[in-house]
Length: 301
Image 1 (cartoon, one colour):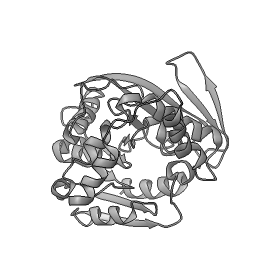
Image 2: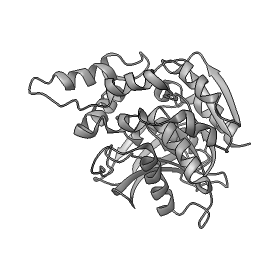
Image 3: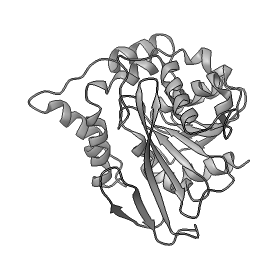
Image 4: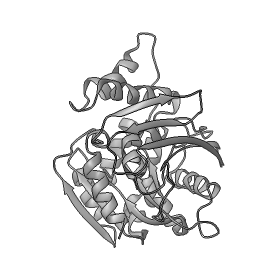
């Protein structure tokens, strides 16, 4: 978590989200998360953008890709911490948050292609301001790695905690379990299942309000909530990860994907694995200090 308490100042809908961090090491103690839209292959893409008020440094910007079934808001505290010294962005995957949905579930290459659309529209790439650094979590790991393969001009370095790497029968089992519709019912049972996951079962250091924010984020994805699981569990990561040529950091948090992450890392040529046994779940809410320190050290090389 950030060392200092955060105070919210809300404006009209669509206005900047401002958070004041007392005691920040940033000369200007107020940092903002702004919102903007760009066009992509499936419609509008919503992007959160955070930068210190005094402007961004010469450090490479960082783009974040969130897990299923939430939005870029998942990275809120991490973005604020990392934006002390660089521009930080988080894209809502199509069908999640405020990004338009595709017409049907898409393969991972299309989700990565949408990420490329967003970065192109924001002015990055070989014909613009060059490559960015990327971080993904769960689903976002594969969006980030596939983007690095198909558009190496857009990606300089990758940070991949929590890689949902499965092969063979295990991947098929995960697909059958998660890549299927799960509709709301009149009795609210599905909503309560989501509530239990994000709120009742949250890490004890995650506030009730923050857990409820994740719940709302998940709930609003509605009929699209499972679509990204189709992308993840139909993705031949064992064939694609070896094609990543950029340097990769795997901060291996010790949740239910620690062995999956190690197996995935073994397929990547230029990779560094950092074990984080103290982080199990709710890591981007309770482990911001550790994740940002490891990420910053790696990205600043």
